[in-house]
Image 1 (cartoon, helix red, strand yellow):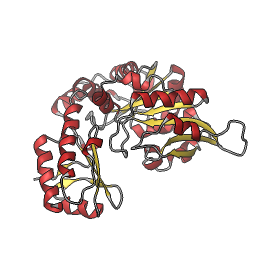
Image 2 (cartoon, helix red, strand yellow; image 1 turned 180 degrees about the horizontal axis):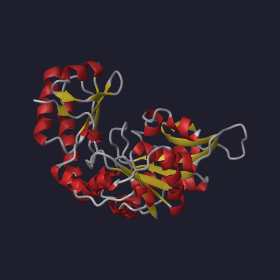
Image 3 (cartoon, one colour; image 1 turned 120 degrees about the vertical axis):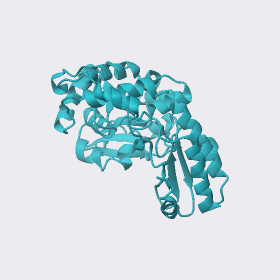
Length: 340
């Protein structure tokens, strides 16, 4: 029997229905604006997120890196984001290499910082010795924060401070729809006030490829240049865009099942010896917990349950559409065998 895969929600595989939609996709040359399925996806996501236009890209990392380059200038501009944010930890130094940006990290709570923290971090505009504060980024939900949902009030506080200081704003929407389902807040309410945002399809939504960056028509026209430059342009991209459209139709509301399974997993883990975890902190589909020897636990479980060790003590387990409640219970039994 293969191990239960709680490694990440990126591990999902296209369902039979998604594969059928992919096989039936109407396609054309994306670079000439002739792929109808991609055009439909871009328009739908732009509307969903409350923006004028969208651009289909291979990955969320490319969405982030293009947005950073569009909003700030190399050679002294600075992006402000939480210390746990994806561009800081998981994009191979891309903000420095691709956008030439200084990175200023804020020490938020589980990946969520406040307007007051942002206010305190913004550089004095007239000081020629310092980098220029230019851009602020928010990650919804916070991955390394344990799937924490940015409350709408916190988002609005950050946007208000950014507007007062003339900062550009960007939302990393890798797990945006998890936040929408968990909070009941519309996606456009979370993203509409940002200069750019994006939605990923390869995590809880279950598609194999793709994300859509949204913004003004002018910003997306410029984003196209960077998509071309970075090798992200497609030809018959409707083949993969169709999977993303299927995900929007079939895999959004069911994210609540993943959240419920994560809660069951968290409550079970919290009762095991040597586990440091507050189950109430688990808001979506990510369960982060601490043990004495995270790499050792992960290695001992590898033939039964796949999870990630993020450092010496922290382990991450992620529920998704390819993991059932029964598999969560079986995973808990395996954890109990090792920790009990």
